[in-house]
Length: 330
Image 1 (cartoon, helix red, strand yellow):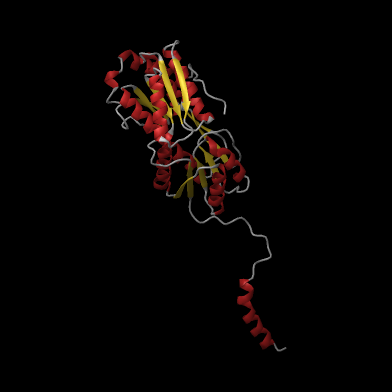
Image 2: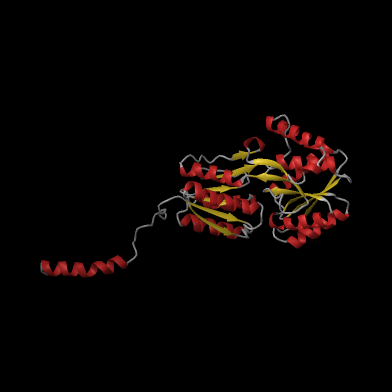
């Protein structure tokens, strides 16, 4: 066969060979250029609370760090893992799982994708590329309980939760401790509806608590919180906001226990973008400014001055470390 014919055959075969699958094992997908951040939430970002704050954090990352961002709402543990894997396979730099319930799925996926960082907004699991943001919201919910203890006419306060999670039970533990600090004889009652989105169910649970004599209500129920606020407004009692400043949502919201999620999200994302992420839990309490207790300014005049003063003094004791607020072990 002549050299000329060999060259011709080689040229004809090249396109065909290019279409054949490679026999070599493929490396992990190459990350696209740029900083990419994803957020998984367990509920709608329209909830004016827990999930809304996280979405605001994602948008703050987009604005302040120039990241390309993506969000998806997921319901089940299998969906948690599926979406984490999809984002990591696509080359996402950082994945937020918004809540305690995401940490196990994050741990399973993190070991398979060392180039992606996974951050959960609660929990304790940590590794080289996974860590939780630990929000000590209990310090603010303790203050809510203190107010209820001082102001309740019935010495009874109710708590309404959505899905029963250790992180939510922990905020209730702190609320009850604050309640009893304000009135040692006060009684707290807890109800879980099993849903973060069932507004009607949360309202029914709240009304039942009011019928039992509870004249203060605290929630950790995400979107379902609207039902709690509606019940409090209808029955003329006080309620507290949670996770976000919810003071404007209803005329019954006396104060809110707040997490500045945008600030925390941007700080976490910046450590990843700058290569400073170390896989250690990041804790935020009242001292950090990320956690706060916020009075409803429109209603502050209806709070006795001694109660306002006591809240400020107690806040100072918590920040200084003199007073340690109880917290669940999770």
